[in-house]
Image 1 (spheres, rainbow, N blue to C red):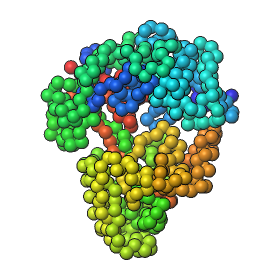
Image 2: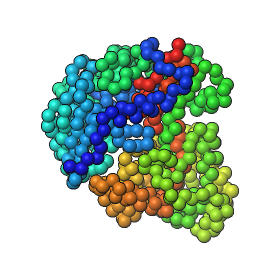
Image 3: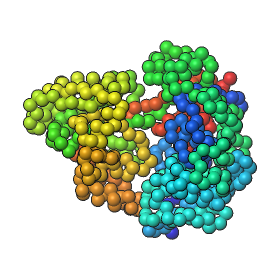
Image 4: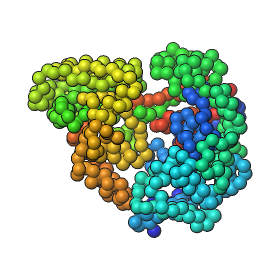
Amino acid sequence: MKKLFVILAVGVCMGVGLHGSLLGASDQPKTGGTMTLAIRSDLLLTNPFVNVRSTQGRILDLLFDPLLGLDAKGRIQPHLAEAWETSKDGKVITFKLRKGVKFHNGQEMTTEDVKFSMNYSRNPKNGAQGFPELAPVENVEAVDRYTLRVSLKESSPAFLYSLTAIRAFTVTPKDSVAEGLDKITAFPPGTGPYKFVEWKPQQQVVLERFADFWGPKPYVDRLIMKPNRDDTVRFTALRAGDVDFIERAPLEWVKQIVEGKIKGVRYSAAQHAELRGIEFNVAVPPFNNKKLRQAVVHAVNKEELFQAAFMGLGEVTDQKYPKGHDWYFDGMPVPSFNPEKARALLKEAGYRGETIDFLVHSSPVDQAKATALQAQLKRIGMNMRIKLVDTGQYRTLPRQGEFAFRFDGGTLYPDPLMAYGEYRCEPDLSKRAQNTSGYCNKEMDGWIEKAEKEVNPEKRRALVRQIVAKLMDDMPEMYVGYAPQFYAHRDYVKGFATDSDANFRWWGGGLTHTWLEK
Protein backbone atom coordinates (compact mmCIF):
# COMPACT_ATOMS: atom_id res chain seq x y z
CA MET A 1 0.00 0.00 0.00
CA LYS A 2 1.20 3.47 -0.86
CA LYS A 3 0.75 5.87 2.02
CA LEU A 4 -0.61 9.19 0.76
CA PHE A 5 -1.42 10.83 4.04
CA VAL A 6 -1.20 9.74 7.67
CA ILE A 7 -1.65 12.54 10.17
CA LEU A 8 -3.22 12.93 13.57
CA ALA A 9 -2.44 15.96 15.71
CA VAL A 10 -0.96 17.99 12.86
CA GLY A 11 -4.37 18.57 11.25
CA VAL A 12 -5.88 19.85 14.47
CA CYS A 13 -2.84 22.02 15.18
CA MET A 14 -2.98 23.54 11.71
CA GLY A 15 -6.65 24.38 12.21
CA VAL A 16 -5.92 26.05 15.55
CA GLY A 17 -2.98 27.87 13.99
CA LEU A 18 -5.18 29.38 11.32
CA HIS A 19 -7.66 30.32 14.02
CA GLY A 20 -4.94 31.91 16.12
CA SER A 21 -3.67 33.95 13.19
CA LEU A 22 -6.97 35.82 13.21
CA LEU A 23 -6.43 37.12 16.72
CA GLY A 24 -4.86 40.40 17.72
CA ALA A 25 -3.03 40.89 21.01
CA SER A 26 -6.15 42.27 22.73
CA ASP A 27 -8.65 40.00 20.97
CA GLN A 28 -8.89 36.91 23.13
CA PRO A 29 -11.85 34.62 22.42
CA LYS A 30 -14.84 34.63 24.74
CA THR A 31 -17.32 31.80 25.12
CA GLY A 32 -21.07 32.34 25.27
CA GLY A 33 -23.85 34.47 23.90
CA THR A 34 -26.33 34.35 21.04
CA MET A 35 -25.58 35.63 17.54
CA THR A 36 -28.38 36.58 15.17
CA LEU A 37 -27.68 36.25 11.46
CA ALA A 38 -29.70 37.58 8.51
CA ILE A 39 -29.32 34.97 5.77
CA ARG A 40 -30.26 35.19 2.12
CA SER A 41 -32.57 32.17 1.90
CA ASP A 42 -34.39 29.74 4.15
CA LEU A 43 -33.87 26.04 4.60
CA LEU A 44 -35.68 23.90 2.03
CA LEU A 45 -35.43 20.36 3.39
CA THR A 46 -34.31 18.49 6.49
CA ASN A 47 -32.85 15.62 4.47
CA PRO A 48 -29.12 16.53 4.47
CA PHE A 49 -28.37 14.31 1.47
CA VAL A 50 -30.76 15.91 -1.02
CA ASN A 51 -29.92 19.62 -1.07
CA VAL A 52 -26.48 20.90 -0.10
CA ARG A 53 -26.51 24.08 -2.20
CA SER A 54 -26.12 27.77 -1.37
CA THR A 55 -27.31 28.95 2.07
CA GLN A 56 -28.82 25.54 2.86
CA GLY A 57 -25.40 23.95 2.36
CA ARG A 58 -23.71 26.57 4.53
CA ILE A 59 -26.12 25.80 7.38
CA LEU A 60 -25.62 22.05 6.96
CA ASP A 61 -21.84 22.59 7.23
CA LEU A 62 -22.42 23.60 10.85
CA LEU A 63 -24.39 20.42 11.61
CA PHE A 64 -22.48 17.78 9.65
CA ASP A 65 -18.91 16.85 8.74
CA PRO A 66 -17.24 15.53 5.58
CA LEU A 67 -14.81 12.66 5.74
CA LEU A 68 -11.84 14.89 4.75
CA GLY A 69 -10.98 18.58 4.86
CA LEU A 70 -9.49 21.06 2.39
CA ASP A 71 -7.20 23.88 3.51
CA ALA A 72 -6.89 27.38 2.05
CA LYS A 73 -4.20 26.28 -0.40
CA GLY A 74 -6.33 23.46 -1.78
CA ARG A 75 -4.56 20.63 0.03
CA ILE A 76 -6.47 17.66 1.46
CA GLN A 77 -6.44 17.42 5.25
CA PRO A 78 -7.77 14.97 7.89
CA HIS A 79 -11.25 15.44 9.30
CA LEU A 80 -13.54 12.57 10.36
CA ALA A 81 -10.94 10.34 8.76
CA GLU A 82 -7.63 10.98 10.49
CA ALA A 83 -5.56 8.89 8.05
CA TRP A 84 -5.87 7.09 4.72
CA GLU A 85 -3.88 4.86 2.38
CA THR A 86 -4.26 4.31 -1.35
CA SER A 87 -3.25 1.10 -3.11
CA LYS A 88 -0.57 1.23 -5.80
CA ASP A 89 -3.14 0.90 -8.57
CA GLY A 90 -5.22 3.73 -7.02
CA LYS A 91 -8.37 1.59 -6.87
CA VAL A 92 -8.59 0.87 -3.12
CA ILE A 93 -8.57 3.54 -0.41
CA THR A 94 -8.47 2.55 3.26
CA PHE A 95 -9.60 5.16 5.79
CA LYS A 96 -8.88 5.20 9.53
CA LEU A 97 -11.70 7.01 11.31
CA ARG A 98 -11.18 9.33 14.23
CA LYS A 99 -12.13 7.58 17.47
CA GLY A 100 -14.54 9.04 19.99
CA VAL A 101 -16.53 11.20 17.55
CA LYS A 102 -20.06 11.66 18.89
CA PHE A 103 -23.28 12.25 17.02
CA HIS A 104 -25.65 14.84 18.43
CA ASN A 105 -27.69 12.01 20.01
CA GLY A 106 -24.62 10.85 21.98
CA GLN A 107 -23.93 7.78 19.84
CA GLU A 108 -20.31 7.18 18.75
CA MET A 109 -19.59 7.31 15.02
CA THR A 110 -18.26 4.07 13.50
CA THR A 111 -17.54 2.72 10.03
CA GLU A 112 -21.06 1.26 9.85
CA ASP A 113 -22.43 4.82 9.95
CA VAL A 114 -20.06 6.07 7.26
CA LYS A 115 -20.81 3.02 5.11
CA PHE A 116 -24.56 3.63 5.45
CA SER A 117 -24.15 7.31 4.56
CA MET A 118 -22.02 6.63 1.47
CA ASN A 119 -24.38 3.94 0.25
CA TYR A 120 -27.39 6.18 0.82
CA SER A 121 -25.86 8.76 -1.54
CA ARG A 122 -24.94 6.00 -4.02
CA ASN A 123 -28.54 4.77 -4.28
CA PRO A 124 -30.17 6.52 -7.26
CA LYS A 125 -33.62 6.08 -5.69
CA ASN A 126 -32.70 8.52 -2.90
CA GLY A 127 -32.08 11.56 -5.10
CA ALA A 128 -28.92 12.45 -3.18
CA GLN A 129 -26.96 15.40 -4.50
CA GLY A 130 -23.72 13.48 -4.00
CA PHE A 131 -24.70 10.64 -6.35
CA PRO A 132 -22.39 11.84 -9.20
CA GLU A 133 -19.44 12.32 -6.82
CA LEU A 134 -19.73 8.72 -5.63
CA ALA A 135 -20.19 7.24 -9.11
CA PRO A 136 -16.55 5.94 -9.15
CA VAL A 137 -17.27 3.72 -6.10
CA GLU A 138 -17.57 -0.04 -6.65
CA ASN A 139 -17.94 -1.14 -3.03
CA VAL A 140 -17.81 0.18 0.55
CA GLU A 141 -16.65 -2.18 3.30
CA ALA A 142 -16.57 -1.78 7.09
CA VAL A 143 -13.34 -3.66 7.91
CA ASP A 144 -13.64 -3.02 11.64
CA ARG A 145 -15.14 -0.39 13.95
CA TYR A 146 -12.78 2.36 12.75
CA THR A 147 -11.44 1.09 9.39
CA LEU A 148 -13.33 1.72 6.14
CA ARG A 149 -12.28 0.32 2.76
CA VAL A 150 -13.59 1.94 -0.43
CA SER A 151 -13.03 0.15 -3.75
CA LEU A 152 -13.22 2.18 -6.96
CA LYS A 153 -14.15 1.00 -10.45
CA GLU A 154 -10.92 2.57 -11.69
CA SER A 155 -8.27 4.87 -10.27
CA SER A 156 -9.56 8.39 -9.64
CA PRO A 157 -7.26 10.88 -7.87
CA ALA A 158 -10.11 13.41 -7.91
CA PHE A 159 -12.23 11.13 -5.75
CA LEU A 160 -10.47 12.15 -2.52
CA TYR A 161 -11.19 15.81 -3.29
CA SER A 162 -14.90 15.02 -3.55
CA LEU A 163 -14.82 13.74 0.05
CA THR A 164 -13.73 17.15 1.37
CA ALA A 165 -17.29 18.53 1.25
CA ILE A 166 -20.62 17.28 2.58
CA ARG A 167 -22.02 17.50 -0.95
CA ALA A 168 -20.78 13.92 -1.53
CA PHE A 169 -22.51 12.63 1.61
CA THR A 170 -23.25 13.71 5.15
CA VAL A 171 -22.23 11.27 7.89
CA THR A 172 -25.32 10.30 9.85
CA PRO A 173 -26.09 7.29 12.10
CA LYS A 174 -26.85 4.00 10.37
CA ASP A 175 -30.50 3.77 9.26
CA SER A 176 -31.24 7.33 10.46
CA VAL A 177 -32.73 8.34 7.10
CA ALA A 178 -35.26 6.12 5.36
CA GLU A 179 -34.52 5.04 1.80
CA GLY A 180 -36.41 6.82 -0.96
CA LEU A 181 -37.62 9.80 1.09
CA ASP A 182 -36.45 13.29 0.17
CA LYS A 183 -38.69 14.94 2.77
CA ILE A 184 -38.27 13.91 6.41
CA THR A 185 -39.66 15.57 9.51
CA ALA A 186 -36.37 16.49 11.22
CA PHE A 187 -32.63 16.47 10.64
CA PRO A 188 -30.87 13.23 11.56
CA PRO A 189 -28.06 13.61 14.11
CA GLY A 190 -24.79 14.96 12.75
CA THR A 191 -21.27 15.23 14.17
CA GLY A 192 -20.82 18.97 13.55
CA PRO A 193 -20.02 21.77 16.02
CA TYR A 194 -23.65 22.87 16.25
CA LYS A 195 -26.81 20.83 16.71
CA PHE A 196 -30.26 21.54 15.33
CA VAL A 197 -32.87 23.07 17.68
CA GLU A 198 -35.75 24.34 15.55
CA TRP A 199 -36.84 25.55 12.14
CA LYS A 200 -39.80 27.87 11.68
CA PRO A 201 -40.12 28.24 7.89
CA GLN A 202 -39.56 31.79 6.65
CA GLN A 203 -38.96 32.93 10.24
CA GLN A 204 -35.84 31.42 11.77
CA VAL A 205 -33.45 28.50 12.10
CA VAL A 206 -31.93 27.92 15.55
CA LEU A 207 -28.74 25.98 16.27
CA GLU A 208 -26.98 25.32 19.59
CA ARG A 209 -23.34 24.66 20.40
CA PHE A 210 -22.64 20.91 20.62
CA ALA A 211 -20.80 20.34 23.89
CA ASP A 212 -19.37 16.98 22.79
CA PHE A 213 -18.04 18.13 19.43
CA TRP A 214 -14.87 16.20 18.58
CA GLY A 215 -12.84 19.23 17.46
CA PRO A 216 -12.18 22.71 18.90
CA LYS A 217 -15.49 23.86 20.40
CA PRO A 218 -17.21 26.91 18.92
CA TYR A 219 -17.39 30.00 21.12
CA VAL A 220 -20.94 31.23 20.49
CA ASP A 221 -23.62 29.24 22.34
CA ARG A 222 -26.54 29.81 20.00
CA LEU A 223 -27.03 30.88 16.37
CA ILE A 224 -30.37 32.31 15.23
CA MET A 225 -30.68 32.65 11.45
CA LYS A 226 -33.41 34.79 9.94
CA PRO A 227 -34.03 34.53 6.16
CA ASN A 228 -34.59 37.57 3.94
CA ARG A 229 -33.74 37.70 0.23
CA ASP A 230 -33.60 41.52 0.09
CA ASP A 231 -29.94 42.57 0.38
CA THR A 232 -30.81 46.12 1.43
CA VAL A 233 -33.25 44.97 4.12
CA ARG A 234 -30.58 42.68 5.60
CA PHE A 235 -28.00 45.44 5.64
CA THR A 236 -30.45 47.94 7.15
CA ALA A 237 -31.19 45.45 9.95
CA LEU A 238 -27.45 45.14 10.59
CA ARG A 239 -26.95 48.92 10.80
CA ALA A 240 -29.90 49.19 13.17
CA GLY A 241 -28.46 46.49 15.43
CA ASP A 242 -31.40 44.12 14.89
CA VAL A 243 -28.97 41.44 13.70
CA ASP A 244 -25.27 40.85 14.35
CA PHE A 245 -24.20 39.37 11.03
CA ILE A 246 -25.39 39.16 7.40
CA GLU A 247 -24.42 37.18 4.34
CA ARG A 248 -24.17 38.65 0.81
CA ALA A 249 -23.54 42.22 1.92
CA PRO A 250 -24.23 44.58 -1.04
CA LEU A 251 -21.06 45.82 -2.75
CA GLU A 252 -22.02 49.50 -2.54
CA TRP A 253 -22.36 49.23 1.25
CA VAL A 254 -19.09 47.34 1.61
CA LYS A 255 -17.38 50.16 -0.26
CA GLN A 256 -18.75 52.62 2.32
CA ILE A 257 -17.47 50.41 5.15
CA VAL A 258 -14.02 50.41 3.54
CA GLU A 259 -14.14 54.20 3.25
CA GLY A 260 -15.09 54.55 6.93
CA LYS A 261 -18.51 56.06 6.20
CA ILE A 262 -20.43 53.42 8.15
CA LYS A 263 -19.51 53.14 11.80
CA GLY A 264 -19.72 50.04 13.97
CA VAL A 265 -19.77 47.62 11.03
CA ARG A 266 -16.99 45.46 9.59
CA TYR A 267 -16.83 43.10 6.61
CA SER A 268 -15.21 39.82 5.62
CA ALA A 269 -14.53 38.87 2.00
CA ALA A 270 -14.61 35.54 0.21
CA GLN A 271 -11.91 36.90 -2.07
CA HIS A 272 -12.06 34.09 -4.63
CA ALA A 273 -15.80 33.42 -4.61
CA GLU A 274 -16.38 33.72 -8.37
CA LEU A 275 -13.91 33.40 -11.22
CA ARG A 276 -14.64 35.88 -14.03
CA GLY A 277 -13.28 35.60 -17.54
CA ILE A 278 -13.86 36.46 -21.20
CA GLU A 279 -14.85 33.43 -23.23
CA PHE A 280 -14.42 33.31 -27.01
CA ASN A 281 -16.49 31.17 -29.38
CA VAL A 282 -13.45 29.67 -31.10
CA ALA A 283 -15.42 27.32 -33.37
CA VAL A 284 -16.66 30.00 -35.78
CA PRO A 285 -15.56 33.42 -37.10
CA PRO A 286 -14.39 35.85 -36.02
CA PHE A 287 -12.71 34.28 -32.95
CA ASN A 288 -11.65 31.09 -34.65
CA ASN A 289 -8.78 33.45 -35.56
CA LYS A 290 -6.20 33.03 -32.75
CA LYS A 291 -4.54 36.38 -33.49
CA LEU A 292 -7.85 38.17 -32.97
CA ARG A 293 -8.23 36.47 -29.58
CA GLN A 294 -4.69 37.49 -28.69
CA ALA A 295 -5.43 41.08 -29.69
CA VAL A 296 -8.31 41.21 -27.22
CA VAL A 297 -6.20 39.62 -24.49
CA HIS A 298 -3.44 42.23 -24.84
CA ALA A 299 -6.00 45.06 -24.99
CA VAL A 300 -7.68 44.22 -21.68
CA ASN A 301 -6.69 46.13 -18.56
CA LYS A 302 -7.94 43.71 -15.90
CA GLU A 303 -7.55 46.13 -13.00
CA GLU A 304 -9.64 48.74 -14.83
CA LEU A 305 -12.41 46.20 -15.48
CA PHE A 306 -12.55 45.20 -11.83
CA GLN A 307 -12.50 48.81 -10.72
CA ALA A 308 -15.55 49.45 -12.89
CA ALA A 309 -17.47 46.38 -11.74
CA PHE A 310 -16.32 45.75 -8.17
CA MET A 311 -14.94 49.11 -7.07
CA GLY A 312 -11.43 47.65 -7.02
CA LEU A 313 -12.29 44.99 -4.44
CA GLY A 314 -11.65 42.01 -6.73
CA GLU A 315 -8.37 40.22 -7.44
CA VAL A 316 -7.01 39.73 -10.96
CA THR A 317 -5.64 36.37 -12.12
CA ASP A 318 -4.20 34.64 -15.19
CA GLN A 319 -5.20 31.07 -14.27
CA LYS A 320 -8.25 29.34 -12.82
CA TYR A 321 -6.56 29.25 -9.41
CA PRO A 322 -5.19 32.25 -7.49
CA LYS A 323 -1.53 32.76 -6.68
CA GLY A 324 -0.52 30.79 -3.60
CA HIS A 325 -2.98 27.98 -4.31
CA ASP A 326 -1.59 24.48 -4.70
CA TRP A 327 -2.84 24.34 -8.32
CA TYR A 328 -1.47 27.70 -9.43
CA PHE A 329 1.60 27.25 -11.61
CA ASP A 330 4.42 29.77 -11.35
CA GLY A 331 6.59 30.48 -14.36
CA MET A 332 3.84 30.39 -16.99
CA PRO A 333 4.09 32.95 -19.85
CA VAL A 334 1.43 35.53 -19.01
CA PRO A 335 0.10 37.85 -21.75
CA SER A 336 0.62 41.43 -20.62
CA PHE A 337 -1.58 44.48 -21.03
CA ASN A 338 0.00 45.93 -24.17
CA PRO A 339 -2.27 48.07 -26.41
CA GLU A 340 0.48 48.56 -28.99
CA LYS A 341 0.93 44.82 -29.40
CA ALA A 342 -2.87 44.43 -29.49
CA ARG A 343 -3.11 46.84 -32.43
CA ALA A 344 -0.38 44.93 -34.30
CA LEU A 345 -2.17 41.60 -33.71
CA LEU A 346 -5.45 43.14 -34.83
CA LYS A 347 -3.81 44.09 -38.13
CA GLU A 348 -2.21 40.64 -38.51
CA ALA A 349 -5.62 39.05 -37.89
CA GLY A 350 -7.02 40.89 -40.91
CA TYR A 351 -9.53 42.86 -38.88
CA ARG A 352 -11.19 45.61 -40.98
CA GLY A 353 -13.27 47.49 -38.44
CA GLU A 354 -16.37 45.29 -38.47
CA THR A 355 -18.62 45.38 -35.41
CA ILE A 356 -18.46 42.33 -33.13
CA ASP A 357 -21.29 41.61 -30.70
CA PHE A 358 -20.44 40.95 -27.06
CA LEU A 359 -23.09 38.91 -25.23
CA VAL A 360 -23.90 40.52 -21.87
CA HIS A 361 -26.20 39.51 -19.05
CA SER A 362 -28.50 42.35 -18.06
CA SER A 363 -27.16 42.57 -14.48
CA PRO A 364 -25.69 45.98 -13.48
CA VAL A 365 -22.29 44.45 -12.66
CA ASP A 366 -21.94 42.78 -16.07
CA GLN A 367 -23.13 45.92 -17.84
CA ALA A 368 -20.50 47.99 -16.02
CA LYS A 369 -17.77 45.51 -16.99
CA ALA A 370 -18.97 45.40 -20.59
CA THR A 371 -18.95 49.18 -20.91
CA ALA A 372 -15.38 49.30 -19.59
CA LEU A 373 -14.33 46.51 -21.97
CA GLN A 374 -15.97 48.26 -24.91
CA ALA A 375 -13.92 51.40 -24.20
CA GLN A 376 -10.69 49.38 -23.91
CA LEU A 377 -11.23 47.63 -27.25
CA LYS A 378 -12.14 50.93 -28.88
CA ARG A 379 -8.67 52.21 -27.96
CA ILE A 380 -7.04 49.55 -30.14
CA GLY A 381 -9.51 50.07 -32.98
CA MET A 382 -11.95 47.21 -32.38
CA ASN A 383 -15.65 47.96 -32.55
CA MET A 384 -17.57 46.02 -29.93
CA ARG A 385 -21.35 46.21 -29.60
CA ILE A 386 -23.03 45.27 -26.33
CA LYS A 387 -25.84 42.75 -26.80
CA LEU A 388 -27.94 42.67 -23.62
CA VAL A 389 -29.93 39.50 -22.91
CA ASP A 390 -31.92 38.11 -19.99
CA THR A 391 -30.89 35.21 -17.78
CA GLY A 392 -32.58 32.56 -19.92
CA GLN A 393 -30.94 33.71 -23.15
CA TYR A 394 -27.58 34.06 -21.44
CA ARG A 395 -27.74 30.38 -20.54
CA THR A 396 -29.13 29.01 -23.83
CA LEU A 397 -27.32 31.05 -26.51
CA PRO A 398 -23.77 29.97 -25.55
CA ARG A 399 -24.84 26.32 -25.45
CA GLN A 400 -26.20 26.73 -28.98
CA GLY A 401 -22.98 28.45 -30.08
CA GLU A 402 -24.89 31.66 -30.81
CA PHE A 403 -22.37 34.23 -29.59
CA ALA A 404 -18.98 35.71 -30.48
CA PHE A 405 -17.57 36.42 -27.03
CA ARG A 406 -18.93 37.02 -23.56
CA PHE A 407 -18.18 37.12 -19.84
CA ASP A 408 -17.97 33.68 -18.26
CA GLY A 409 -17.90 32.60 -14.64
CA GLY A 410 -16.74 29.73 -12.50
CA THR A 411 -15.74 28.62 -9.05
CA LEU A 412 -12.63 27.41 -7.25
CA TYR A 413 -12.89 23.66 -7.87
CA PRO A 414 -11.11 21.42 -5.34
CA ASP A 415 -9.57 19.29 -8.11
CA PRO A 416 -7.96 20.85 -11.22
CA LEU A 417 -9.47 18.32 -13.62
CA MET A 418 -12.91 19.56 -12.56
CA ALA A 419 -11.77 23.03 -13.62
CA TYR A 420 -9.87 22.32 -16.83
CA GLY A 421 -11.78 19.20 -17.91
CA GLU A 422 -14.57 21.40 -19.23
CA TYR A 423 -12.43 22.18 -22.31
CA ARG A 424 -12.79 18.65 -23.69
CA CYS A 425 -13.99 18.37 -27.28
CA GLU A 426 -17.78 18.07 -27.59
CA PRO A 427 -19.49 16.20 -30.46
CA ASP A 428 -22.30 18.65 -31.24
CA LEU A 429 -21.41 22.36 -31.23
CA SER A 430 -25.08 23.31 -31.45
CA LYS A 431 -25.73 21.52 -28.15
CA ARG A 432 -22.74 22.37 -25.99
CA ALA A 433 -22.84 20.96 -22.48
CA GLN A 434 -19.81 22.28 -20.57
CA ASN A 435 -17.41 23.50 -23.25
CA THR A 436 -19.34 26.54 -24.45
CA SER A 437 -16.21 27.98 -26.10
CA GLY A 438 -16.33 25.22 -28.72
CA TYR A 439 -12.59 24.63 -28.21
CA CYS A 440 -11.28 21.23 -29.30
CA ASN A 441 -7.79 19.77 -29.08
CA LYS A 442 -7.65 15.96 -29.24
CA GLU A 443 -4.10 15.86 -27.90
CA MET A 444 -5.11 17.85 -24.81
CA ASP A 445 -8.14 15.56 -24.33
CA GLY A 446 -5.64 12.73 -24.04
CA TRP A 447 -3.67 14.60 -21.39
CA ILE A 448 -6.88 15.20 -19.42
CA GLU A 449 -7.88 11.53 -19.59
CA LYS A 450 -4.41 10.45 -18.51
CA ALA A 451 -4.31 12.95 -15.62
CA GLU A 452 -7.71 11.76 -14.37
CA LYS A 453 -6.26 8.28 -13.78
CA GLU A 454 -2.66 9.13 -12.83
CA VAL A 455 -2.01 8.13 -9.21
CA ASN A 456 1.54 9.50 -9.06
CA PRO A 457 1.16 13.08 -7.70
CA GLU A 458 4.25 14.44 -9.50
CA LYS A 459 3.26 12.96 -12.87
CA ARG A 460 -0.31 14.17 -12.45
CA ARG A 461 0.88 17.66 -11.61
CA ALA A 462 3.11 17.71 -14.70
CA LEU A 463 0.13 16.75 -16.88
CA VAL A 464 -2.07 19.46 -15.40
CA ARG A 465 0.69 22.03 -15.95
CA GLN A 466 0.88 20.91 -19.58
CA ILE A 467 -2.89 21.39 -19.94
CA VAL A 468 -2.76 24.87 -18.41
CA ALA A 469 0.13 25.89 -20.69
CA LYS A 470 -1.78 24.74 -23.77
CA LEU A 471 -4.90 26.66 -22.77
CA MET A 472 -2.89 29.81 -22.07
CA ASP A 473 -1.38 29.53 -25.54
CA ASP A 474 -4.60 28.79 -27.45
CA MET A 475 -6.66 31.14 -25.24
CA PRO A 476 -10.26 29.89 -25.64
CA GLU A 477 -10.88 31.94 -22.51
CA MET A 478 -9.06 34.80 -20.83
CA TYR A 479 -9.15 34.61 -17.04
CA VAL A 480 -9.68 38.13 -15.72
CA GLY A 481 -10.00 37.78 -11.95
CA TYR A 482 -11.98 36.77 -8.90
CA ALA A 483 -15.11 38.61 -7.86
CA PRO A 484 -15.55 38.59 -4.07
CA GLN A 485 -18.62 37.96 -1.99
CA PHE A 486 -19.00 39.71 1.33
CA TYR A 487 -20.25 39.15 4.82
CA ALA A 488 -20.83 42.14 7.08
CA HIS A 489 -21.13 42.16 10.86
CA ARG A 490 -21.16 44.43 13.88
CA ASP A 491 -17.71 45.34 15.17
CA TYR A 492 -18.20 43.31 18.35
CA VAL A 493 -18.29 40.14 16.23
CA LYS A 494 -14.69 38.92 16.33
CA GLY A 495 -12.57 36.21 14.70
CA PHE A 496 -14.74 35.51 11.64
CA ALA A 497 -13.07 34.76 8.32
CA THR A 498 -14.61 32.92 5.40
CA ASP A 499 -13.05 30.80 2.67
CA SER A 500 -13.06 31.09 -1.12
CA ASP A 501 -16.60 29.69 -1.35
CA ALA A 502 -18.04 32.09 1.27
CA ASN A 503 -18.87 29.24 3.65
CA PHE A 504 -20.07 29.66 7.24
CA ARG A 505 -17.61 26.98 8.27
CA TRP A 506 -14.48 25.68 6.60
CA TRP A 507 -11.42 23.69 7.57
CA GLY A 508 -9.51 26.72 8.90
CA GLY A 509 -12.20 28.97 10.36
CA GLY A 510 -15.67 30.46 10.04
CA LEU A 511 -18.45 30.78 12.59
CA THR A 512 -16.86 28.09 14.76
CA HIS A 513 -13.94 30.48 15.33
CA THR A 514 -16.14 33.53 15.97
CA TRP A 515 -17.00 35.12 19.30
CA LEU A 516 -18.89 38.13 20.65
CA GLU A 517 -17.02 40.97 22.35
CA LYS A 518 -19.97 42.44 24.23
